Image 1 (cartoon, rainbow, N blue to C red):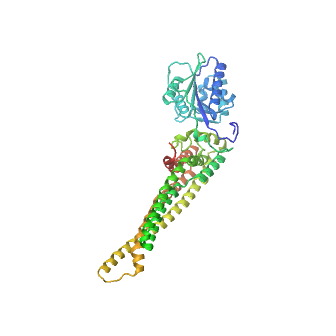
Image 2 (cartoon, rainbow, N blue to C red):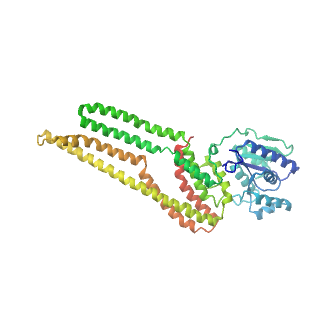
Image 3 (cartoon, rainbow, N blue to C red):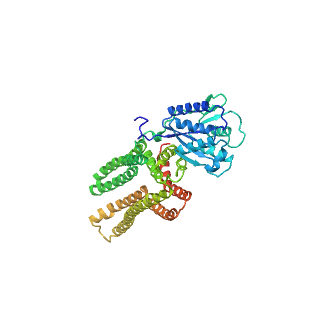
Length: 480
């Protein structure tokens, strides 16, 4: 499939930029920036996205070069537009900045509500935190204050962000010392299904994860069941076939024990070799993102702090979802219905299933346990009566009541308890009940939220709650 295919879900490579306000030869510097952008586009397997503030000077040249190259841009402002305009001495430069902001795929104000120069420092750190590569237009001189280009160059080196530096005096370009990156193959995008929308990619990932799941718990449960079945069959053979049954029973139990030992290994191998874990994690992250991407920044979507390893995948999807935004009120109402209400229904259903299965296997355990106690006690009492010549044991009671049933019931009790443990019925029932209760408490708070920031805070809280189990689950199963 060609890279230009619109159905191809490609990684967004964020190229951050920082440069000086004063530019001597704007046309030549922009040409150098454009060449660097072309080189990034040619060397990176994905879509290059320009990331910068819209400050006067080199930053505007970078954003213009991105637009001329047909690249998407993301703008991070140090202040709201009205305050930001005061930092422009030339009205024509401000009009250019407004045009770049309007053309950007996403434009946001850096957090913190700082004043200059600290606000520019916050922007620089925001850019560094997101950027996969940095491009600087720097004169090579030491920093003269907070928020300057030299300070950002030093921080990029400290943070290990691969950086290209354009010397504004000579227009020569070099990699920052020790930062030239090796070739990168991002596994998160290696085998993604095609799709024109994030929803289409999600549906295909979800279907693929379901169809490829090895059901490793079933292999463990099968192993436990085969082991106990072997004990049961051995008891049948020994009790009903006497001496010949002992040899046959031992052989049968040995063969079945070998099968039982192999089942968990097979399940583990399937779990490791198949890509279903990656598919499941990516599908659940997209499910979360489709519900929670608005309001809030696509650079810091909910769940990002839990899944830092997946940050490129999450941000790439979030950037594609920007065009689907409908406003924070619509986002709030959709989240209530499509996320919270759906999850409450899902957890109630799953919790009910787990509780019912817990009760069934719990009853089997207690019946088998007390049955074993009763029959074992009866066997002891019978033996005492036989020794005292008080009673002659009937053959059927001797076979069934004193040998077969006392041998089998403890195994059934152990099997039922093992099934409860393997499938975690008790833990899952309690967890789902707790999640339902928490979501029911969150729901009215979100329904009553009357501003975008309040909606954003509650949605982030809710997504962290919902994604926490996925985070724990994937930590045990994903390849390191």
